[in-house]
Structure formats: structure tokens, C-alpha cells
Amino acid sequence: MSRQAADNQDEPKNAKYVPHTLRKHAARRALTEEANWNREKAHVETIRWRDTWPTTEYALNEKSTEHKQLIVLDLNGTLLYRGPHQRDRPRVVMARPKLDEFLEFATKHFAVMVWSSAQPENIMSMLKESFGDHEKKLVRVWDRRFCDLSGSYFSKAQSIKDLTRITDGFTLADSPNSNVYGTYEGHLGIFPEKQDHWKVENIILVDDSESKAAMQKDNHIFVSTYTGSWRDGELGVLTTYLHNYLCQKEKYPDLLGYVKDNSWIEFRNNVVRLNTDEINMEVSD
Ligand SMILES: [Mg+2]
Image: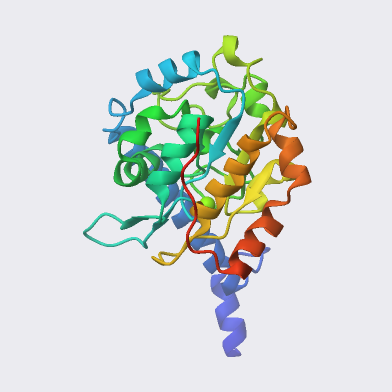
């Protein structure tokens, strides 16, 4: 009997041949699914951050704000740099140069919310390490659960921040991922009484990722990704850009009108070209 015939004797008749590589992929997929499930379980069981958000302040700010223009801020790569995972230590968070001045200016003249595609506990640590007192001036913080995801919540799925979710009364209950943290809700949708207060023409998204703004490209202030350099001047330039808008507010009832007439990318590149390193941060009332 040939060796091949002897091997085949052990296989049940009509058994389908599955190549080794496919079996390997299936095994790997099962392991990944199990790991995702364990991570999900661990999240639900170890949430310790639920009471640490200043949600009362956010609610008060949102209800009381008179500002009709809303700036939506991304965190990682836009306002700060978050280092790689480390085995025994928390990830390093480095605030982008002039973040403090930018937040001082922005929260004074605009309504400001944070919308990150990160998970809530990661957002909390980023805010705690980089925002200081400015955290309590935000009108809202939205996390990954409010994004439109191309895949499962705990995978590296593409995420989109659709600004109409702010104006259309999207709530956590509308998210397919509303229950990933058990019954904890944390951040809710915009208060119904405020939904008419902001319209999409008065909202801009400041984000270092082009794909996040796929639904409203015109509203996107596409900043360069911050990688930790102390020489970075992006937030200073952005402050000047928004300051210029305030000086022309009469001309532009909608913020989007200003953004369309005054390309952010051109403005930024001109400043970089002129090598302007002294940005006037003073804005008169
Ligand atoms: Mg980012």
C-alpha cells in the first residue's frame, strides 16, 4: 500500500479536504474572537471611571451656552500625542504646544465639545492629563459609541463622525454599541431643547483624520497629526484662523461660510511658509 493510501485510510470517507493554511486562519480567528469577548467582559466588569466624568458641568454648560458656533475637537493626533502601549505603565500623553491657550480662547468664544473615536476610559485619561480646568468648560464629550463604525466596536474599525448626529438628536440608545458597557450610559445625546440651537452650518470638526469627516468634508478643519514635537505650531495657527473669523463675524452669520471663503489649508500653509512663529493669542472682547 502506498504511503498516501495509508494516510487516507485514517480520514473518514467523503471528508472534505481543508488546506492547512485555512485551518490555521480559522484557529486564529477563533482565538481573536475569544480575545475580543474577554476584553468586552473585562470592560464591563472593571469600569471604575463611571463616576469621574464632570457630566454635571457639561450639562450646565450646554444648557447655558449662548454660543451658536460649536467646535468639535478630536483628541489623539489633534490636541495631543498618545504614546504606544507599555506593559506596566500607562501610555504617555503629550499635550500639543499651545493647547492651554487654544482651549482658553476656544471655550471663551465658542461652544466646545470633544468627540473622539477612542473608548470612554481612554478619553477620560487623555482629558485628565492634558485639559486641566478646561475639561469642565466643555459642553459635551462623545466617545466611540457615537461614531459610525465600519466594523465591530472592539476592532480597529474605521469610524466616521457624522455631525448631523449632533443636530438630529442622536442618543446613545440609537447607537448599535449602546450596551457595550452594560447599563452605564455616561454621555447622552444633545438635550432636546438645544437641538435647534446648533445647526450643521455652524459646526466645525477639528480632526487630524480625513476619513472621520467623510460625511461633512466642508466642515472639516484638517489639522496635521501631532507626533510629539515641541516645535509644532498648529494650534497657534488655528487660534489665529478662528480669531480672524471672530473679526468678520458680521459678514459670516454661519461659521461654514467663513471656512468656505477662507481655506484653512491655504491659510495654514501660508503661515508655515512665512515662518511666523509668533502668533498673537490675544483676542479682544
Ligand atoms: Mg485623531
